[in-house]
Length: 458
Image (cartoon, rainbow, N blue to C red; front, side):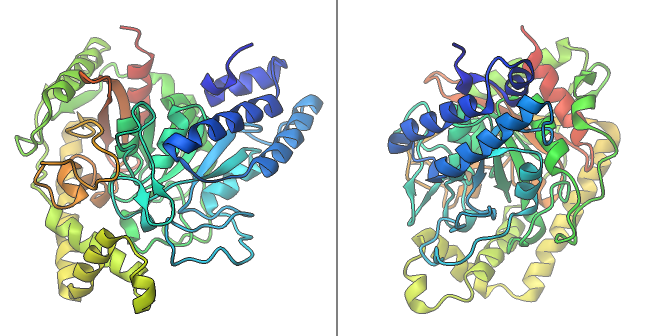
């Protein structure tokens, strides 16, 4: 019998069509895997087994009649516990949120998945309010790496990444305000896309404003394209959502990279110290892109370190999301989150607008950069997974998580599509990711390049 937990969504759907196996079998296998990994990895806030099996049985009946509900009918999926999912509390990693309530509304992306017949396995872990690049919280504890439980899975969508990597569902919904789908996907060796801002509607609106994106996390680019075709539709609850996509992302994914102009920036012009094993794996992948017909040039975008502006925007958002809490509730917060909230509360409106000015100028420079280059390629991260339970690697000298994520958060500021592709491992067998970035609204190019790279057998 095929190990159904190792199949992609595309492969599961093929099996449902032919009758080789059913959504019930696939869901049972994914649930068993989720229960198996939970004690050591801690990827889930809750596993919704009963509801999932009910959904799977309904899907199986639709497939038996030859009437699937949509593009993902019967495919198991997980939802990061930042996003609303009907029938389950959304606690956002915080002891300050009560489980009481009706919990009767889906976030737009969850509603789209439900309309297309997806099976919801449960809610995955997040740091408190998604505030940092690793996944641990006062509510759920530490989420650990799928290959080495002494190390972090990354964050803030760490539970989602670990679940996909270990076979607890081929699809996951994550969020990304500074790298939060790309960081854990890179650490865990899976694929993830931060779409162009607004491509996937978000409701309720994030306190982190227009830095916050919703993104698919999968094993490959083909599954992400399929998922984006489902979740990338407008929703009236999001005033900043984009209109319908001009075409299917699945239909455009096989176009290859021949003739594309690719800028390869190994260290953002020497600003980033990249671990040698990471740099080597990324360079080999870039050489493969050239071998597939891309015009590759080693060059750097004009991305002068924008961390201070990002901190102003990010810490202000953290202060806003906790503004309503009283003194007793604040004592329940992650200590690191309390620190950044205190900083954020001290920024003035003029400080915030100055950070917006930096952001707009960065966006202008990247827009001009993409007049010359279709794609920008960088390492996703300069390092591989470090010790679990820490915000920064021991001995790194970094104060906050942004110190070791210099390749990811700038593209939240510019709202560009950016994906991470697994391209090898370091000397400890830990995954290395390559980041592919395109101009705003060119998610199709990111997916095409990623698919070509992941499909290349060399």
